[in-house]
Image 1: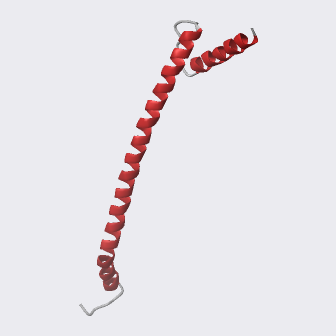
Image 2: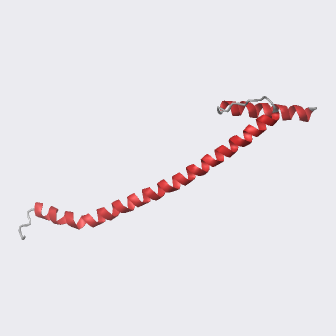
Length: 93
């Protein structure tokens, strides 16, 4: 009897958590609650996997952008120096 009460209590807690998460539980049976919880967990796992893939893609894009910018800055530095020298009054040219 005590074991059955603990199980029922945990199923009620799970039902409440699912409802707070926005899930509608069509039937108020233990089986339905467990099935919906299982489906919800799978959905969350799928979403997490997609977000991880998207995060990796964004990291790669960011790395490429930073690398390209550093390359442009390194490549443009010599071109900036002559302009700075000509502004400082170097009339040898």
